[in-house]
Image (cartoon, rainbow, N blue to C red; front, side, top):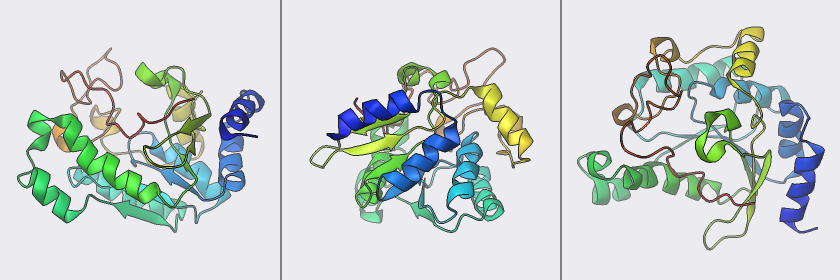
Length: 234
């Protein structure tokens, strides 16, 4: 069966399944699979589920070198707490940074180009050895994520199609909080300081009462995504 047909079938079969069932299918039935994690505000839920299945799963963490110090500390703490043994830290190539952002100011006049340089390009390179990758996106985050399915087909330019799996697609914030509490998981320290969604330091602000949880990402810039998810098409 062609990949797109297979994924449509899986979306029907797994529509009402638990997130960990979706994740386990992805980790065991799709060849070489990586989990991509920002180690952000909600990341610990999916990471904990993965650790219950396979602590050696490749976890790709993109260090843009503009992250909050708290995120870097949290990444190490969570990996150690969950016993994850294959966290791979990904960064942009030094020559690319020197040529295109040698003063670290690209985010001020072209945030899309900055995200492409520091996130999209390094991730695409890291994913070249994988057939499938797993993300922590959820429908309740809104925008382009509102119609998210568990299984997607992604067609990278010039490369064979691959599968993207979103085990938490149907979860909401109350589900996440309940899971974190039930398993006594460490929270990102910036959540308690008004950052329900955490990105890079220059492009993340605190969120006020009543605002959307992602309102602090690229505030007032007309930008809602970093770009690493734009290639997915059903």
